[in-house]
Length: 154
Ligand code: INI
Image 1 (tube, rainbow, N blue to C red):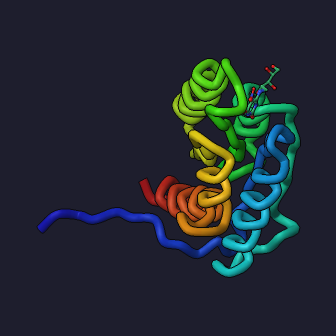
Image 2: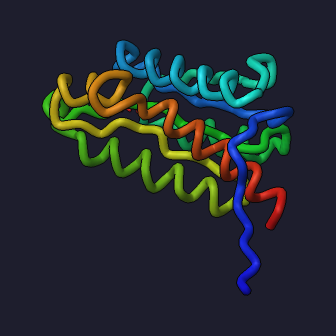
Image 3: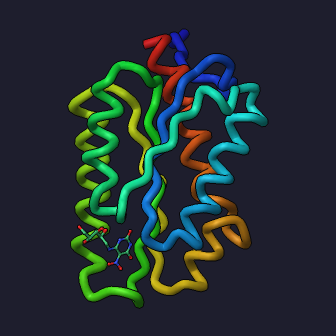
């Protein structure tokens, strides 16, 4: 019989940091709403969530690194939105965000969640910020809750 270890979805007294990109605020503010809503609906407390704002998705990782290193948080959630149609450096921004955020988690051992919408158009981004495809911010926070609880058990 295998020994199964998994994180539950109870936010309880967990502490979260959320880094939010101001670029495409129209979308990222919805992602933030979705993330906070998940904390509250899973038994957590809004007062235990710290929100830090950065100019764009390219800056998410460096702020996440400082928050993760602080030792104050059980998980860090990064929220951003990169739209292909809106920029010729989509690939650079998206790569900086995804690589950087991945590295923060590996360097610190603190679950650092990629909650960045990468979309081909504004319409697609809207679909991922609380309409057809759900809310990427809510999904990211759900992953943060699960990972924070899992890390306590591993
Ligand atoms: N930042 C984003 O978060 N999304 C984008 O779509 C985007 N575009 O289109 O360029 C974007 N650019 C800003 C970037 O993240 C940095 O803030 C900027 O390059 C300064 O380093």
